[in-house]
Image (cartoon, rainbow, N blue to C red; front, side):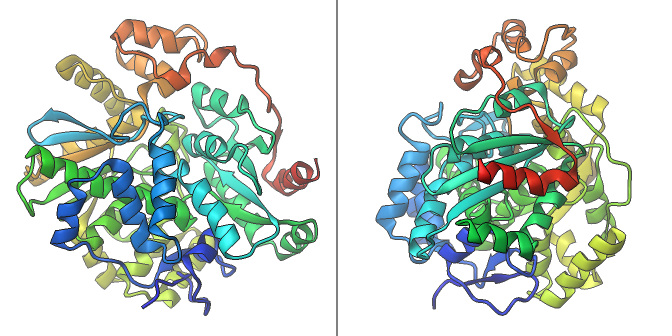
Length: 498
């Protein structure tokens, strides 16, 4: 049976993988999901154990992308994860902290954040999808970012034929290093714009542009169509499944877990795409005991997993883990669709309620299934800082603010549950992207400007600066403008007419 894709909100279309990647978002506002999920047999896992990271990624992606040859995907994965693109040969190495705790380091790519794991291969997938669907128009890729997706997408799509990319970020909602990475981006087909608001405002603005039929018609007449590099696009999400499968294989290879031994994944979570990818890996056959969804002070997901009610009617906090400063977690829609028995009517009702009143509550059956594999935990700014300091003092291991949120969430979970299952903390960014907060956590006054703190953090901790961040402060900003949310449409027009 062919692998087809359809909308979480019940649209009648059953489309190919290439069409789902090219479109990004369904016309009904829903997210594309595969009709069926592939399963990993014991023989398949045995073969995966022998493979390199790029080979594992190509194999996992191939299970979802019918119409793409093995040769194509092997080439894309080899280019994305090999050729010196990542500072670690394994692309996504595991760091063992103690017998039962490993950190999955996803920040060895060209922008020092986990988004590289998907956005180094996604441009190949999108370009191929455009050819396979006979799309003659140029793709205008719109991205809302809470910090890391923006730079990773800009870097991935820089100079890619047939594409232009525009990134919107919250004006005061990213770290200084994250901002510098974006506003100094090189490339003729890129643009960056600050939004006067928070990430949810930027994300809502981008979604509104996708559902604007008049704008779509206008752009089409000019030879453009809108696509996405956010995790609402299946082409962004499916490469992330690969690193969860790979982590399990690495644990088996190292003898850290027995065959068929279960593990926990603890993931710092904002838009829910990263932890959702882990859940897909479990559904494919990776034995997972519990998914620990870690939140910062913006604890909407913690409350959801506790009560079954999703309520964004709460204060929005700007924190030291800005990539998690989100109150509307878009990819939760995909999870709800799957565990509700693919009930698109229920999902549509949830999303309508969220848009109208900012709140919905899932059924008891759905809540029971959530409780089976998920738990939520949050931590304060003070707890985040102490976790950074304690981890460095006790283990000489330097982590960023988002990874600290996840590690603290795991520690809390272990105390409450008594669960000693071997656990993987997903480390999503280099600590050098959040120098000021990390230095403050270590008891050092961060007096210099953002970029200058990179060398200070290296000196204080004896940790080498990642190559992509060396000298970033010497680059001149190219993009300095900001717009209100209602000005995003005109900003897109101006970019495409330039």
